[in-house]
Image (cartoon, rainbow, N blue to C red; front, side, top):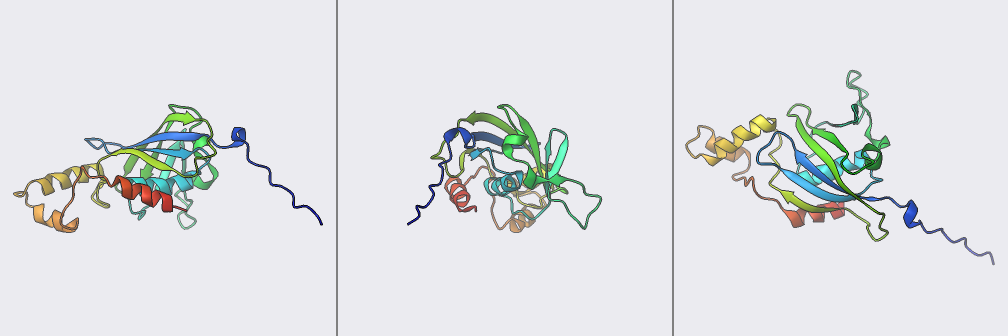
Length: 196
């Protein structure tokens, strides 16, 4: 009887390093940010899904990355003037090979939600690290389609002031209430575990 060949175990040396990354929403005060641990071999395409989950966006708009002056995203065959390199072909490790490296993630090209991404730490490969996790976070994600950072500022003014002419309208639009300081830590990590 022929013996089944044994699969070689992936050595720790060849495994992917673990990145600690901080994502901060630009032009918003007080800052809205997230900190995650994730494998460095994740593609920017996959990282987009992760960012949507941890920030709280609905993935309803185009997005793109700016890494070293080059733009990456999902090429649109129907939009020949929209030129980006395919985000599936670049990993986090390639985009940010050293600690302190940074790049930008832009979500919703109309509202222009720019996210500053910085690699805070690169840890050695860990064969026990199977997933990704949100380590820390501050504040709620702005409501989708509120008009980018200037629109979000106006939205907050309206919902905080019962005498504001758009107070009731804005609260109704957002579903009755909105807490800009809230962050569902357990819920985000649960959704991250479900990402395929």
